Length: 101
Image (tube, rainbow, N blue to C red; front, top):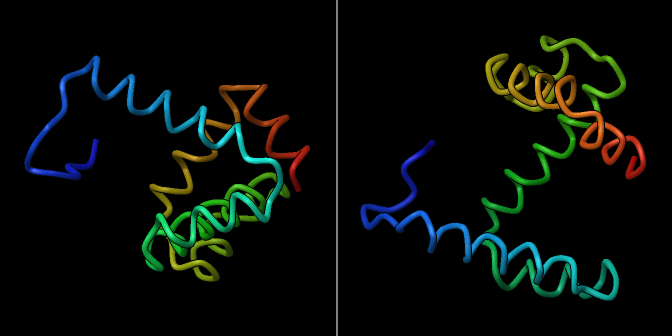
């Protein structure tokens, strides 16, 4: 996992913090409320990264090639392979992607 801080979290803290974040996301009434929170919470770079990842998942779901996606979104084949493997391994995840496209 990428090192995100020189000060690590204990496993239980990381799990609790992550669960609270997912609960927060689930609590938004609509896209406007989520947008309002995220534009204040995330940096512009984090928003772009997240948006590019979503675009990559959509293109993989449409069976576009790694090369085509990589050139368009400036992403490595390693990253795209990881996303593709997640989609292949987890039917619920794949269904969620298709239902949100």
